[in-house]
Image 1: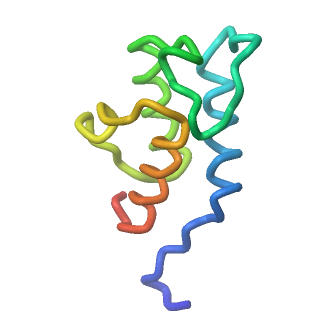
Image 2: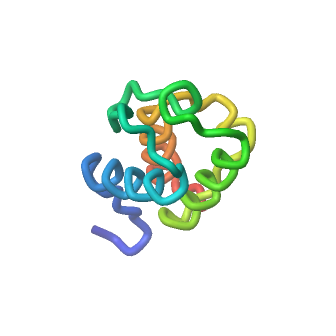
Image 3: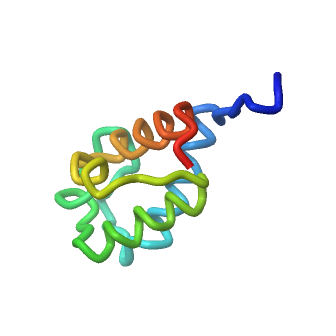
Length: 94
């Protein structure tokens, strides 16, 4: 691997890191909520706009990436967040 190659962590690592962020920022965590790709941020987790802003900032900090408002506006599920992080890391958007 060369020094200019960005290594993207495995999906499970990304998912676990995102899960920890969500658990910290969405309180109280809904009793019946599952952390799976199809879980919806607003409908299933009860996230409001402030939660979403908090999540985006924490995800950016955790992964050292930048996510635009437009990109995050298209995110509706946990799987969308994971895919966006993977894309940003692969593209080296920092």
